[in-house]
Image 1 (cartoon, rainbow, N blue to C red):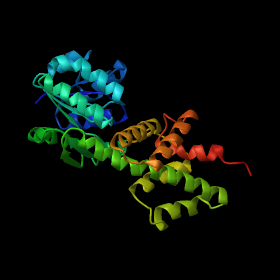
Image 2: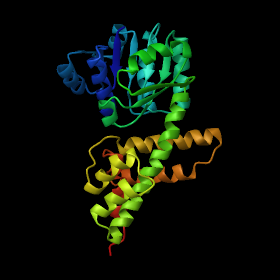
Image 3: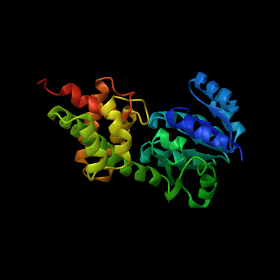
Image 4: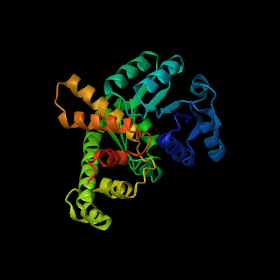
Length: 289
């Protein structure tokens, strides 16, 4: 089993590290070569200088990329080399795009799965993420045998695109919750509640307390926006939700509003920070007393 990974961003780097530690990873590729070389020095793996070079070296290709454009671009370059390959795309992209790409890979003689992750970079490091898999069931055991080394759970959801639909539904709640938490924290602090009182409210008293609030409330209160999940990626996900909802003919008014608020936050320069930085939108737009 020879495995290659493309995309060493916040999540991809950690997935690659887990797979290498499990003795599975052979080669990596990253658009920014310096990032790949840094990984290679730390974990002693080969760096591919091109996508074709990586494809020729491996049987299994994992992609962890930013958006539809990036995944489509990479897959278009891999197609001529995809005969007999199994491609696992762990990116969060449009299910419609993913299904179309999977069809192209199939016509070229390969197999593709969507396998988006539920969880943060911290969860990846601790192998606690849940991976939601969509693709042909007969090849799912091959996918599970790899991804179990970087996840707490690997779940087969259904055919191509279904892993992504489940991920988007989960993130729909998370996006709304992050916005609601930011709004409530700003309200409570402007009303005069102390840091300790706000912390106690959202981590101990409120019925909305959850692993997400335990992780994000301290970041919002302390202004620690080191990235676990970038705000710009949350905005991208909500835009996918809105587009897919239009295609499915279902209303998503809350998600549409949250998507606009995330876009406004990006306009304030918060896009590269953690999604918890959305609280700054409320702080910066509150009327001075």
